[in-house]
Amino acid sequence: MNYIKPTDNATANGATAAGGTKEPTRRKFIGAAAAGATGAAIGGFPMISVAQSPVVFKMQGSWGAKDIFNEMAEEYVKRVNEMSGGRLKIDYLVGGAVVKPFEVMDAVNKGVLDAGHTVPVYWYGKSKVASLFGSGPINGCDAQQTLA
Image 1 (cartoon, rainbow, N blue to C red):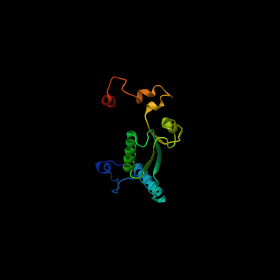
Image 2 (image 1 turned 90 degrees about the vertical axis):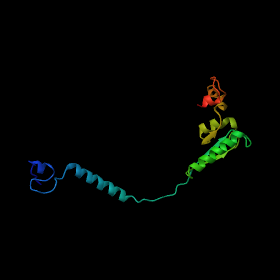
Image 3 (image 1 turned 60 degrees about the horizontal axis):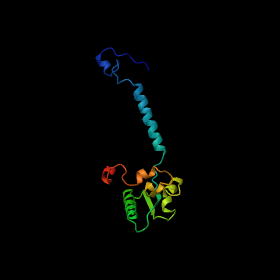
Image 4 (image 1 turned 120 degrees about the vertical axis):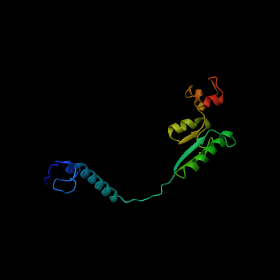
């Protein structure tokens, strides 16, 4: 197709010199082609909804069944299970169910457990620095100041 170059304001605003409609542009063509290709790709894949099973984590604590820290761990598990809407489920095990209480961090590190509810000071035998993160206030702050 041969187009006539616009020479005045009427033709510069989008009309052709012959009085027709706007000239096709490269951008419009590419945009239309991309939209068509996207539509064809989406139409080629059926939308199938499959109910997925929840992700299950096995978590062990370092605490006995009557320990206050065990109650805290159980409350944490309950809250996470409720908030996840069934997509995540944490199976909580008391201390000693899979590994000994002082071996929880090693078991998580090795992949035996997915998560652990313990304190870093229990890894003191592996690294002396762990006591900085799991024992009392060594920096002169009380618990509230340390947590802040």
